[in-house]
Image (cartoon, rainbow, N blue to C red):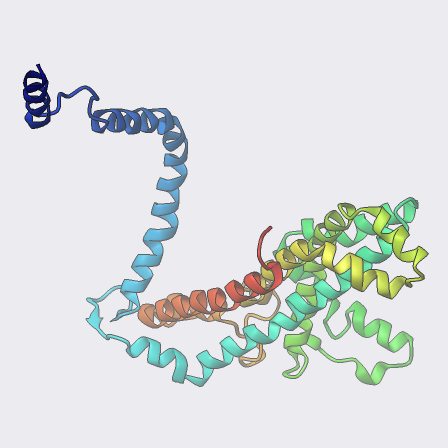
Length: 323
């Protein structure tokens, strides 16, 4: 009897296992196909935007990179130039000067409006219940809704020899300081910076006020109980509370400074001389007036790279790690 059982046991051990559990591979494939089918409407909704982005953003960038490697006037056959156009960008004093002007504009287009907006937003937050707060918000944000071309024309009139700026200086006894602000080599770029700061401060103000409205008011009450003054409240509570909004303000205004075109084209067209020439305007002149398509493309790609090199570290530094 035991031998029979032993033989049956040995037969079971030696036999191939029966496929009692079906394979999971078909199930996995079926699950992936089902998930893909369910997400198909999402891809269909994104597809038009992706096509638009590819045709009108990625394709021009790729073509610009291609043109930057050739010497071409836009009409005659192009000749291979390699990296000569990029060498021209970094060795031509005129092109290098335009890049340096753009970095100098960061002071006026970014640092000045952000600091002014921080101060104004903190003051408006303190008088939030007053009607004056609403008036201040409207007045300071108004330049943001004015087209940049109109702003450039208006400030060109104000900075003229008989403009409002010089008239005010003469009225207060400072007529010796009066000059054609946009026509002077020393003051043209700062005058353009004033226009950019005037336009940007409204946007920064609204963003920072939105950030301050999210700060818990109990923090300020606790700080006052502990004897903290306005400066201490601003440094310890307000600034950390608007860190994200401050980062957005800085990034937007830095990009506006490096990629500036319309205000400068309307107000000075890069003059006097090349004192207000910036890369965006220089690309326009190289491509449409000098017919140097390769150099213009190389400068445009260099400008894009500089914007990324400046903005990405700033974004990481100001915004920090997301919680």
